[in-house]
Amino acid sequence: MVRMLVAVGAAASLVTAPGAAAASPAGPWTTPPPPDKIVINVATVNGSGCPAGTAAVAVSPDNTAFTITYSQYLAQVGVGSKPTDYRKNCQLNLNVHVPQGFTYAIASADYRGFAHLERGATGLQKASYYFQGSAQTTTSNHRFTGPVDDSWQATDSVDVAALVYAPCGEQRNFNINTELRVNAGTSDPNKTTSFMTMDSTDGDINTVYHLAWKTCP
Image 1 (cartoon, rainbow, N blue to C red):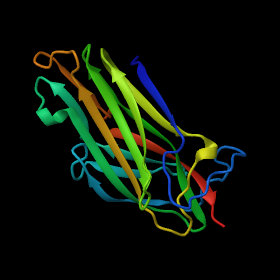
Image 2 (image 1 turned 135 degrees about the horizontal axis):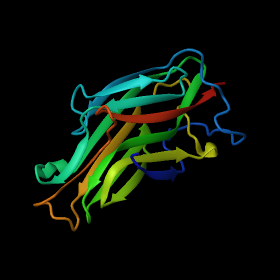
Image 3 (image 1 turned 30 degrees about the vertical axis):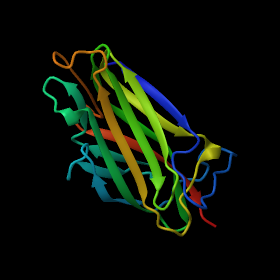
C-alpha cells in the first residue's frame, strides 16, 4: 500500500473580497447547496504548469465542490531537466455562475500528487487565492524534505467564522495561482533527479475545492 504524505495548512481565510460578509459561527456550512447547478468557466489559464488545453474544471453533482484537473504539471531538477524546470506554476481565472439568491466561499482546498525527492532535496507546493478586484491575496505553503518517494496530499482549510463570501449581486471572478518548486539542496543534480507533481493514478492532477454556501438577503 502506498503511504500518503500529508501536509495541512490553516489560514485565517483563503479568499477575501471587499464588502464580503463573514459566515455565522453557529455551525459549519449550515446553508445547504442550491438545488440548481453552478457553472464554472475557465476565463483564462496561464502558466508553465498548465499549457493550453491541459486544465479542465468539473463541478460535483451536489454543488459542494469543484475539481480542477491538469495533465502536465511537473517541477524537477537534476538529470534530464532544463534549468527552468525547477519551478512550474498555473494561474487560473474562473468565472463562477451561482444560482440567484446564493453566494459562495471556498471552505477548503485539497491538493494531491507524487514526489520523488533525493536526500537533501526539497519541494514546495504553494497556492494563492483572491477574488477579482480584491487587493488582498492569501497564500499558503506546504514544504517537503527528501528523501521522499511517495504520494503526497496538502490541505488548506478555513475556520468557519473566518469564511469570506463573494459579494452578493456582483460578478467577481475567482483567481487561483498554484506553484510547484523543487530545489536540489545538498543532493547532486549531476547524478540524480528530484521531481514533484500533482499527479493521480491516471496521470492527471486533481485539485478539489470545497464550497460553503450562503443565501443572499
